[in-house]
Length: 296
Image 1 (cartoon, helix red, strand yellow):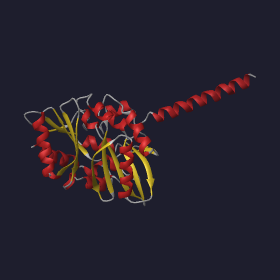
Image 2: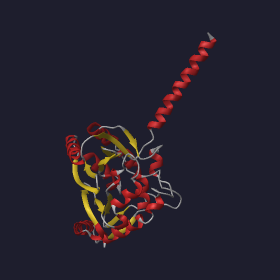
Image 3: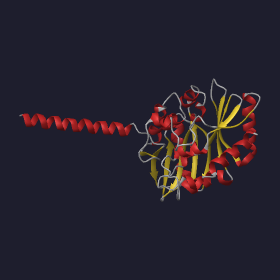
Image 4: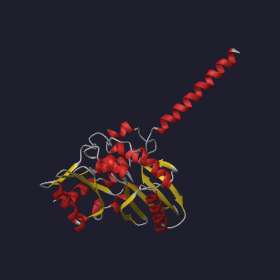
């Protein structure tokens, strides 16, 4: 009888530890979600994906091809915009990025994990409801983009390594005399393709003087295609890393350092070798330089 009690206690303890382990694993967040893999072509899967998104209450605010065989759909909804309005730089998180990519003979549909990016952009909402809406609309096979994942509190204070920037170390690209003029300056520059930077989307955050532009870097080291070719080498593609953001807050114009923004999407990048941070060492500076031309 004593043996049975001890055995029961041991088994119970092991079960509890198992549940604790699962719970701890579940609390780790990864940058992206693989929604599906299927046969077909990018165009037809994109059309079906957009239909699912709009059917779930999302609005498509922009789309483009960052590289051959890859397509981006940027979407928002009222919950995202309301959450963005709650913090000074919440505009960074006003859109979800959905990728449709041909890889390994199949078409992958992926999206930026709202809860991960809400933490990365230090938003006051964890956007869990948005994640549930995306999962309901597009599905969820698994999270990816980081082997182990990170807890939200670690993501909020994330930087790649010592000496690298945090979220609150953005590039201040320029300013104007007021908010409306700053937005007009960026809009005009993007429409003209200054610095090789083009507009993908624009979202004005209700009730605030803040606007986010999703942008496509088209030339030189900053180009989306260059980044993809250098570091997006895994089987599941990080297409939903794009587009980058330029944000207007008040009369000032900002973008995140590539050393932070790229690292947040690729937190497992090694420092040296093929497909490493060293292989894109020139990219962050090129992004800043191109962004300054937009804000000039």
